[in-house]
Image (cartoon, rainbow, N blue to C red; front, side, top):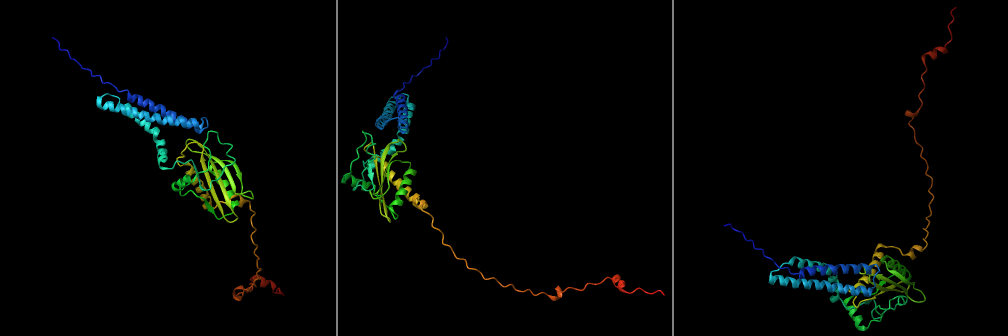
Length: 319
């Protein structure tokens, strides 16, 4: 009789939660990237971008929950599919890396979307009021509670004082606004009508959210003060963006002062002529006579040739 070898094949079940977790994570990471790109280049409105941004974050969290549920089943049942589950968690964490940084600011910083150097004496926008969208946050005067909260969270946000005339400082501020890349909407130099004002808009680096900025220059011929107000158009929390914008602007002004760059007004001033220095006429120096050495310089008598002497003698008479 022949011996037959019997081979036992063990079929291991696969948990499909890991595969679905990876698919969900990939989909919402792509949606998050697409939302940022479309909004950054102005092809997507801000309210729609905020909604898609929230949906993407919720989808990434869902992918992590599905992967964890699959790993629990694998732990107790011994099924396959752990590789896909860990891949889904890794992809979701990559998509949540950048939002996690801003999420820390959401809990650590106060819930403000309007920051200025003089919160107890708020500055008023004029030209930008007509350009703000209808669904944007209304610009309101901060109350005393919000002012106290800002002063506690951002004690360094206050007016900058310079020992220069208000006209020179306004010219310096105008040039700094251009270097910062802000879009100037209105510009009024200081004069009889009041302090100098610049209203501009700025966009955040990543998402491209548009915020409104007001710069004011007040003072006299010897001293000037620079004040800023930065307001977010959307969102109840600016995540510290407005305070960072004011700090960056003041750092630009400090860098200009340290470099010693002249403002446009200073460059336009005529140069003062240099004082002429009278040249004193020098008295001519008397030339000293050079004493010659007689021994070396006296002309020596020339020696006559012997044939010349003979020529001078009279001829002899042969007779």
